[in-house]
Image (cartoon, rainbow, N blue to C red; front, side):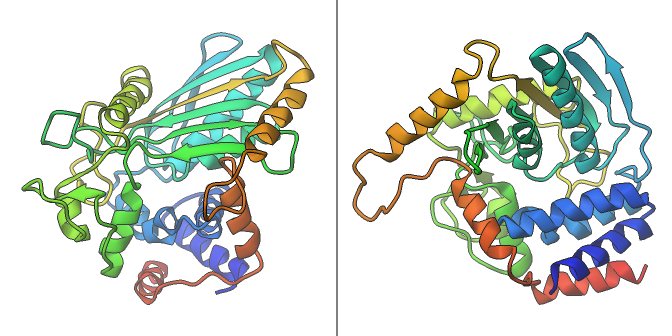
Length: 336
């Protein structure tokens, strides 16, 4: 489907679910960007979920978001149960504002919901020549190292920095081997998941998406990944006054109340210590890595962000393929 037509249809669906024109435009833009970046797990596959939660009054389509300025560098946001895209979009813009004025910006957000890809927000900061860290917690999916019950989310960690090149350095990764959205999408479309990324309820490795959802996902690097997920639960949940410790509700399965997710954004002016030399040194750093001898099967050594940028440039020239099941969901949502 043509991108502009698809975006217009998504926007109409959000507006029918009582969002403002401005907010519907932001949300539809983020979903389209997810598809173009090759992250379909965070794109159209989540549209029905967002709309279902709005209908059940678990996401507020017309939030009254409050921003409390704590200092010249710090703000605290009550998102009023907004869809995550809007809460995070406001939050990163405030962190950018602080970072540009004082050299460092810190923004905590509470009473929010799933906000899509962290790289969306990192890109905004990097375009303003800032370094950035983005954190958000998520519903239980990972068992803490040594436990057999899921408690932590696949809590993503994201870091971005200007590089002096057209493509910024943006590392956006979940603390699980694959993100939860990929398993959800496989479940929706009846596909298998890769071997070795999740266990069923009995603790056996499974490629069945349904069994994986009811079981636990495996963290990256065993206890190290578990530790990172725990750290992000503290930063995004405990620090911001949001749900944490397994209390964040699953947006697909748990309609007993709002998610109350927390987000944390940190921006830093990379020139604060070495001035304009930062860009010179980061270019040198990247060049040194790329000049290393290539392992067998590798034509290039890519830094985080290059692969997604390549996929985006390739996909921007194409129509977006919409699976028949998702197309049917969109038709039903638009008929409301």
